[in-house]
Image (cartoon, rainbow, N blue to C red):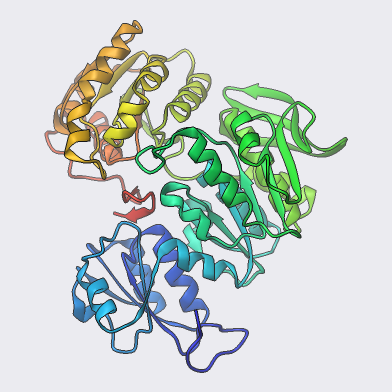
Length: 496
């Protein structure tokens, strides 16, 4: 990207005008805020107004609702588009007609990372939480990092920030191989499993190869942090020659958690760096999977210059991201929890953590499958993971980017039948209003309701909680819990 107009090292975007199509997404809004902070002029559009677009407008961005060629200002020299934006979008058509530079989200993010010391967190699971942990630790250490996270993080003031410090911390998504466009000096691979099989038609071998290519983006004087106990991760990086540190629980890893003690699903543990005790951490988050996330975050934050005591304290203070075992409240003796899990491994980890935290209470789960192809490929694994709940309700599959043929290949009823063969109590209820009425009539004091999935199932949680509090069974679900967000089909958060 060749700078145009006057520029200074302090404000690399001075004299530049960047237009963002899909500016309301968490990732896109983070890029827009960064350009504003670095002296650039920002405009953008989104399908609807939100707290995110309002905040950008207050920062000085010209934000338009809806998509129209006239929204691209005459001064714009670059147009950045979310991966959710289709090629025939009228603003992209206008940009090409005028010969403007057009970049996808991940490509532009990589260019911004190159202006800082980039830290990229990848993996099939745990990316958002671990990225947020790193950003929080660096902030608490006084390093004021820039960051873009695929989830809202209340402690951080959202999912993105343009900091004045030397680091840029990002969540690195493997979908569409977008993480190949990033420019990290340090990177992490948390785990590697089958997912996004509509993109990786060659299965796990192709996914490992893609993660290996991502690892090679770390320079020879950078750092690669990898899960030492995950066989698939180790196979992915087997041919990568970069400075590497491993992490895990126990074992002979460079970074490891030892002496774990659980208290209703939350863990305290010692962190060792090779043979030396590095610090003691007591997590506020539930789940052993978060122990692994925290150890990986410690390795990255240490590389970035935070002290051991600062890292340990920050990890203990970290309250988590939205929709990651987020307890929304309690009414009529029922606790309502919201979670983003949409892969069998994530579901199993979430159910285990919620069980440990609320044992011996009865656990209800409303799980909305996300994407027909993912549901079909992993159907048996979904059934096995979900069968660990006491009662399961499954609505229709959330349609994302599947073909009509794929939509016809699998239904939610297929998943329910497989769950029932595991001996679990599962029920298919097609629409949200019916699920809402059924739950308000069926939940009993002491129950825990877990609303789970990557689509729009989160819309059920707040209204059900309100119904329980008022003792009424409403018939509409067009309300949303305040402050919540949902993801667009490319995996980037979209404010609602």
